[in-house]
Image 1 (cartoon, rainbow, N blue to C red):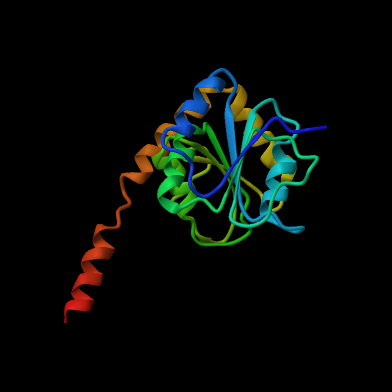
Image 2: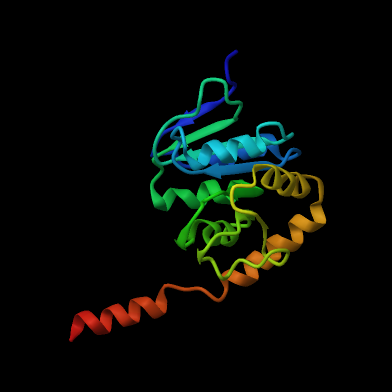
Length: 188
């Protein structure tokens, strides 16, 4: 069985993502990310969403999807500056990291209007408040992740509430203070 998908390398053509997104406006678009390895995070993400009625985009820094995986788009080794185009095109972002130091991808997804589902992990993800700006699931709980994404697909009001909560959250984060400290440290 062949996948009806498109593989896009690290240089998507200008406007490609937004143009593709217009085709799928009726069905929510879910994005998952992570290295695709035998024990990789993307494999768990895929297991959580593979049976859901959604369009699925996979972003991987390493590895390619299994031949039997059903997905609509696959992006590999995408430049950081191009990620906002992908985030902005998606309705739901699923991140199943088992540990985080400071989780930028969920925060970046919030800034781009994605509703976020994450694992409840230890690490620098204090900004993520379950039911306010994200949905959190227990670490390693694939069924919980599936149910969380499904609830966002089916409940436009919940998705809208969490999207707004995400926008409100990102207003409190900026690189400007770090840039000022760095400038002070390097100018002395």
